[in-house]
Length: 167
Image 1 (spheres, rainbow, N blue to C red):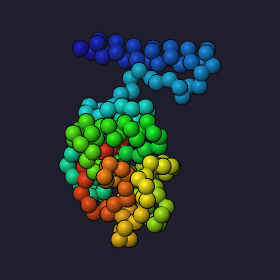
Image 2: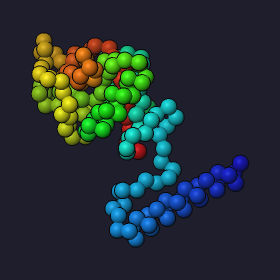
Image 3: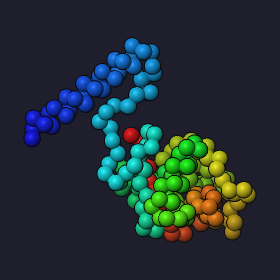
Image 4: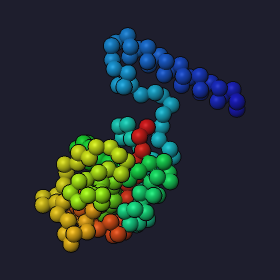
């Protein structure tokens, strides 16, 4: 057993060094290659440089974020159309519908100034028409799939949620 583990470690290290050497020789930016041994934890799905997992158990936004932190991530942040499509398709596959689902956007610190819970720059542009609208002056958290679209929502509402972590 130990010899198999040793072989796997050596193989991964060798492949990583070979990949780095090839990248340098072909003048490719080192950030463009992936090391062979970096994988998502069991149950998570990789998309790009992130791992994602959908949780069915409905929680309010803050409890969902705490749950994501407890497994090494945060509520998901979305920066591109491809990420948006991936996450909404993951929700649909998991639930069989477009279930309302928390991701990591919020403007709880200052109304109208949206942030991602993981600290990344908030550049989300996929809001439903007329959103965010802060109905009732207490919609500070970002949910996907309210009438099929992204929406600002009361953070105390209980939704399933998507966590993500960087590889």
